Length: 138
Image (cartoon, rainbow, N blue to C red; front, side, top):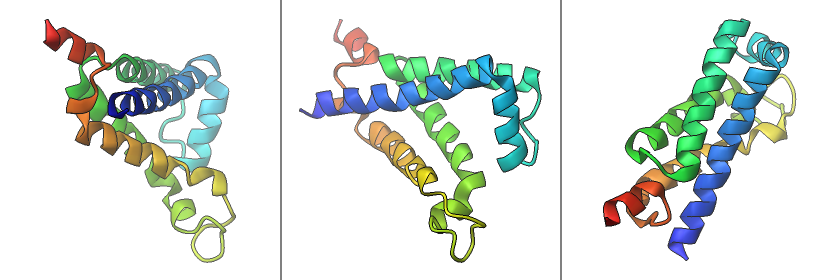
């Protein structure tokens, strides 16, 4: 049951990276709008989003299959931490009463992705359905 749970966690968190990376690649205008709103335009620009989107898809794919987990799991963790920082006011104040300017309950699941990444790192040795684990069996 542990291995299946970790497999499902790995696939779901990695796919989420792939989905958002694909948005950066296919809809740079939407990615630029998100950057303008939450990152003060720091990540705006088609070339930046193509580079970030490509890296995000690669990390997500590595996580999904469980390859190079020493790097890919930490890459995913860093990605989710960096994604959480600009929306931290909405995480701390999801109802928009004290810190955030409005309610954004839909941002709160970002914490789950972050914590799921930590679980994958902490229980990596039990993730026996990963490509890395299968390579080490040989």
